[in-house]
Image (cartoon, rainbow, N blue to C red; front, side, top):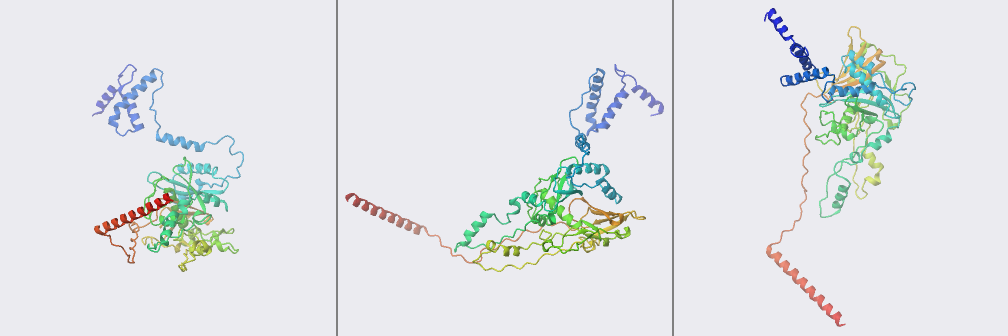
Length: 512
């Protein structure tokens, strides 16, 4: 089409088309604007509907009536309504200092340091998270000393924002004992108390095979230390309510190491796996948080140290303190993995950070646990050990030989280092950054909550079926038909004789 033809076509469309002097060109412009604003899935089918709505709104505005709009809640609008509550502050708030409110760090400042290393969630999300954590601090209670943003675990339907709370000494013991369900923690695998009583009664019989099954001992959870040293709260969006996660048990950590489940974003979701996991997705999430924290929380070497005083025997070497006169390290040194060390205790294969001796517990409760009639010797057990605290990260074993090391360190920018960053190759998504010569550092995790593995995941095989009873049994032969008939006749004759004797005794009594 030539320029003259285009101008003629446009002038034709600009001619008035109705009584309100609205041209077809103006009408098509409004319709296309509506299409670009709402972006319906099928534009061709919705074009006529949008055209009629534009005409209807124009007529309503000409008659002085308000245009009719669809009565539905736009998803972005509902999110905005929830987020605006984060910025609302009641009158008088901030005038008086709240002494019982936990300390909340500057999340925006921390994320700016991570962004220099190419790690972060965006400034808008960070600001919302800052206000959300401040609102959480008003509801956690006096037992929480401080809060910090632990990280973000991704899910298929929704993500989890995780906040870690540091508790006062001894403040969590009563809460944890109250929250632990006796069914989940106290009932060992292999049967309930009724089953144990039934097995005991069966085992006392001489002619019944005695069971060889031995229940696995129940490992108690750690309270105020190890995996339950901190408390955690999660939410799917910074504008939604925070939910406190339950404490973690050693059995949940042991099973979590044997399975691989991507989180869905629903805390009440059932976990179907083998070995069976005792709990919902909230318990699995809590177990993964404990594993990640124990394996990836690192700090510059020399920032922490063991106290000079003698530690208690029950402490297990888990007490460390900040070095007050720590001068820091050069940024070039922080760019090497040798300058970083673990400051969180490792989780043993038992599922605890501090070894629990089952035989010692049996010895202490000899009257209740051991049978006086049987003098069976106790099985020898070897205590499980783990690398001590403040061990360099270079001692970690990599899951994949491709990286050659379990950690990778780097400085940013390369020409004038200001920030040092170290990332875990065993747990992708775990990072730690340090500035000011290592005197300021932070840990963060943003990932799927799964450990790295190159090989395909294969669940453990089902245990072999127990063999049958190995001792011969004396089984009686079934009687023949003739023997059953003879036995029945003998029984009837015997019953008839007993009845005659009873009649004779009764007549004699009457005569007397």
